[in-house]
Length: 97
Image 1 (tube, rainbow, N blue to C red):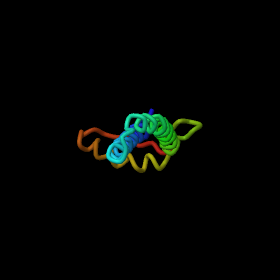
Image 2: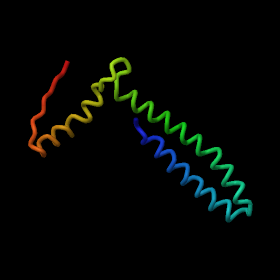
Image 3: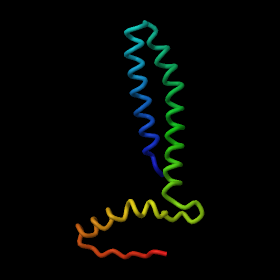
């Protein structure tokens, strides 16, 4: 399962809350309530947006029916696999249908 979207969203939310915390601390004195409210709103929102991103990433790389990788994924990954096989001095087999 992909987790890059959720991790990116969590990092974004934490940095956003940190910026809000700094701004609110200098502008107002009600820091605790504002930080708690922003975390309560933005953290689940970021998580679900990241989860949706992970789903879209998975759907863009694999076929729904068979679960096989699609042509675009193979075109992106194949040169890396060839370089790796050359570096490790291993043979590769290619089967295209």
